Length: 213
Image (cartoon, rainbow, N blue to C red):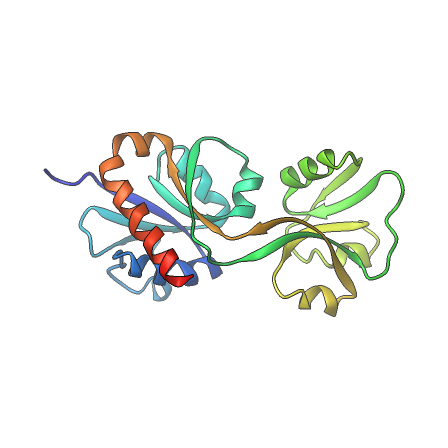
């Protein structure tokens, strides 16, 4: 019985650096060096498995709409995307960091409505609504630390790793919104149609994650 083709969407950047060794432990290796190529689609050591390397924010879309059967994306991206169009069967425990609020060191938060800058507009809105706080959300694409310094926002919502960038810019981390790591996601249709092929990959990745603990 021939294997059905499987496409796995991987996030570019830091997550990719952590994903490739984990996939290798699970027996899936690209046929060429992904980092030295300008290609976006890669064959692997399995004739039926292909890897596509795309922007992290696009991974949930590719998986939900079936262009990819499975994918790897950060929990921050999945929370922002906020869809039930796929399953999230495994925390890969890689690219770990924290999603936090931050403000100028020692600055008092306004009593009433606050201004918050973030690239995660949807999850920031939901977070402050759950807190019962009125917030105007300002979308920025980078350089979040600048927003409180320049008076654009009272708070920012951003990914914090070491916290050194915040400190260097006179900011401090405040509230933890969620611990972040990369997750394996599987399309609902793919899980139904290709379960016989997908489940062993989930199992092998799960074993690789456990071995690293």
